[in-house]
Image (cartoon, rainbow, N blue to C red; front, side):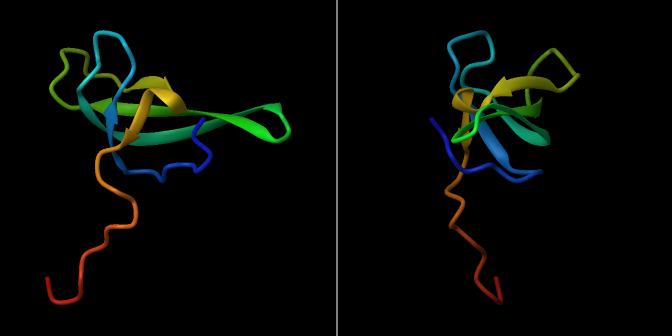
Length: 78
């Protein structure tokens, strides 16, 4: 299970098995459920690109992954 919370405005890929699999989107909101103290469950409200649905949709943390590595940062002067 994913342990790091993805930041707002992150670009993500939908990896769940469903009609939105393979789409990209942008995280608009993050919600946490403290089901177990050592394993919080995160949900992301994602605005999808290229979907007929224009409203953002909720995805569980295991259903999305960063579209680019989070450690990649622009170098000064680029």
